[in-house]
Length: 272
Ligand SMILES: [Zn+2]
Image (tube, rainbow, N blue to C red; front, top):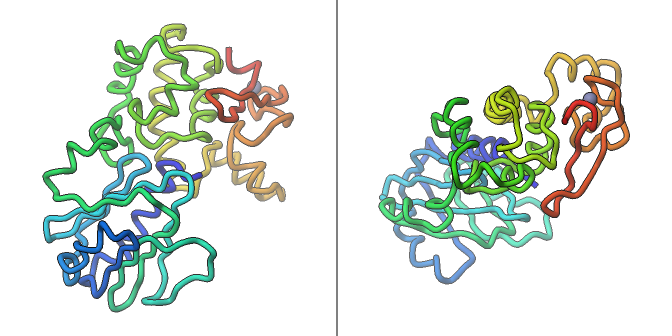
């Protein structure tokens, strides 16, 4: 399931494909959206914003196409009118002279006037998006200790999109490992050092994952492991997906548990 970094990369691909040329044709599968097609043909896509796992295609005609991929949505960028072979259902197709951007399987698609965006139920509730808003480690540190959040468990907090938008399951495990925080802890249980490390890790791992194809492990270590013939699953993360394998910091076997109904990986020696 894609998290903030993967959504931002998909947004970059859509921008690259659609930004330069006007929309030649656009079609929505849902009847309720068809009325907007005529407004958007001939318009330019100025940019593609993200808010966590939501994407906002900003058209110059004063409209924005909002989509949230939930669990199954997937964008494909293809040469114009060149559809992929897939059993997925096409929900939105945007074409220009050269390229097509095709959204499959997503059901959460809306067309908004630009002035309606701030009040949208998901956007208005979402926390800061670390990849598209200027959020500092100090801002996050204060957020961790603020009243709505400081007595909640990290494991549910880090998946809550109103806390920080765009963190998903792999980033949750990796942030907690990097800050040496035990998965049963809450912000109020942590030392100042752990809170500072967590605020830096949230930002740094998000950007690193975005820039380096999802890798949250130390980049030098990941490169070394790769050159030794290790698989991507083995070198990509510090702990995520590495049950029973040795912690890269201390050698203790990594453990897997269920937390907030999702799998979580941690090192019982490093995270206390
Ligand atoms: Zn360890």
